[in-house]
Image 1 (tube, rainbow, N blue to C red):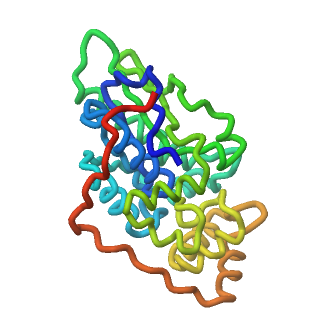
Image 2 (cartoon, rainbow, N blue to C red; image 1 turned 180 degrees about the vertical axis):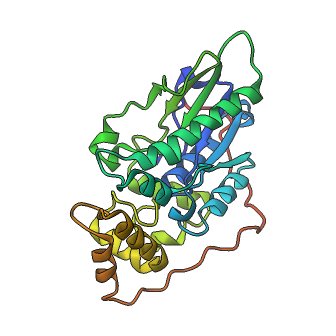
Amino acid sequence: MSTTLHIPPQLHDADAYVLNNSAGKDSAAMLHLWATTATDRMLERTTVLHLDLGDAEWDGVPALAAEQAATYGLPFEIRRRASGGLLDLVRARGRWPGLSTPFCRSYLKRDVARKYYTELTSRLGITGRPARIVTALGLRAAESTVRARRSAVAPDRAASSSRRQVTTWLPIHDLSTDAVWKTVRASGIPPHPAYQRLDRLSCRLCPFAGRNALITAARMAPDTALDYALVEDEIGVPFRRDLSMAQIIEAAEREDPAPVRALRPYGAAPRTLPHRTGACAA
């Protein structure tokens, strides 16, 4: 397995690199490969950004994202939608996110990130030309046919303006799941304990997850499942067309939940930065 990233030449001279970090395995692998491949100049211009999903997120996720950034000595920023989380959105819209209308991603991630780019542009203070910002996402082709069709490097015209040019980069787009886990293990940072029973570290109860994953998640987070069921009753719309939260809870209660190991308390001394190559891969 390669221990370096191919950093496209057109990204070498950016004014800022924003590594979006969900604290999941893909973000962790991307962060490790970037921190051990990028030049010192690139690292000096790097910020790790976590978009906090509030109550929809698993316990310990923001702390783990911060720990991952601290391991490599990188600045860490956390942002969250000011006007409420997922359930607030669901109540306001009277429906749940779906495959054709994933508004949770737009309001909780995309829009929050764009506000951060505005803040970052002002902080950079560049005049006479637009600031060049590269935003890196840990999306991979192996995850879905939609993501497989995405270009690894693409301008984000909607996030760009006369003051900034934002380019979206998918550094680990071609990485296999096995390679991702090998990279996570190489980082030395334990993954979130939710991975003991789930394949992905998404929202606790994600409408896009499979039925079995939702049932497992409801057993792991029964209070959250109950909150969702109450909102389901309130708006009169099922969590999914084919599966209500009430049905998920009913299935989850048929078995006792298995224990899940807690995260190591955040605040322990960060690990030493692994050996770097000192140059970006061509």
